[in-house]
Length: 339
Ligand SMILES: Nc1ncnc2c1ncn2[C@@H]1O[C@H](COP(=O)(O)OP(=O)(O)OP(=O)(O)O)[C@@H](O)[C@H]1O
Ligand SMILES: [Mg+2]
Image (cartoon, rainbow, N blue to C red):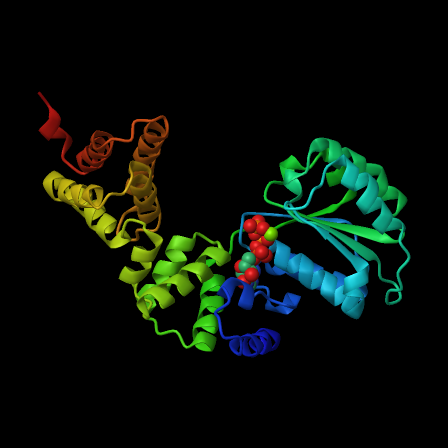
């Protein structure tokens, strides 16, 4: 934690405000939270210097780019500038670049700490064309005594098989609620953010395991409202308020169609789209502990069907009402429906 607070104190002197995601981007692997086993492996590599070619894959905003940079910094130290070539999706990365830029860099002679290799970072590697990836295959082998490749991507299946077989693949999972909470609390403390528990819960709920999103929403709420409360967070994120959705689900569980419809209409009138509503209903039901397991399963099944219809294009209030009706029906006595 030391280093991040150091970087923070440096940034505070800058008069304009940096986005917090950048201001608090971890500088060493110790500060990267979550995915403990994988990060421990990286730490061992950083210490021993025995870096294989690696691919890190996972959802956006969970620390892939950050960990590769930390790893490269820890491996090369002061030699980072000469020893690292970084290319991301904003650079041209067609076949020509692989033939010229990457090859030239791989052939270049640089003085590095003993036992270390030059590192080529290919961020967002899934956007490289298959042709360019093919051109990498032999390059990776020929220069492997001096150069190592670190790739980051969201979908590892977009990386061609032969490259995958040359690399150690590390998969990052979405961050857990506790892990995001820990980081948010640190940032709140350093930025002197005023918050309540409800606000933090809302940030974690809306971020869905994406740290970048959580930090961005924290900053937006802080600068927009000055106080991080549940209501403010949902205003910033523009998502249906789960408390309202919870109310609707509770009515469904009591078989109270009118109550449930009222709440649904309220959400609809606030202007949320059918997809927003159905996705929030799903996430609320998934974590709703007032509901017995078997009801939950039946509910999720129905929600799934409605989601499918909405994605097929029928995003009307009628579909949502149909869902609410079916959910209510499950909690009513079957005799009532006999004709
Ligand atoms: N595991 C983490 N620990 C601490 N901070 C994190 C973590 N993951 C993400 N962050 C924060 O989110 C920001 C973005 O992270 P990063 O650039 O590593 O995401 P990424 O996984 O490369 O995402 P993308 O797939 O969109 O490129 C960082 O600047 C950092 O502030
Ligand atoms: Mg990235």
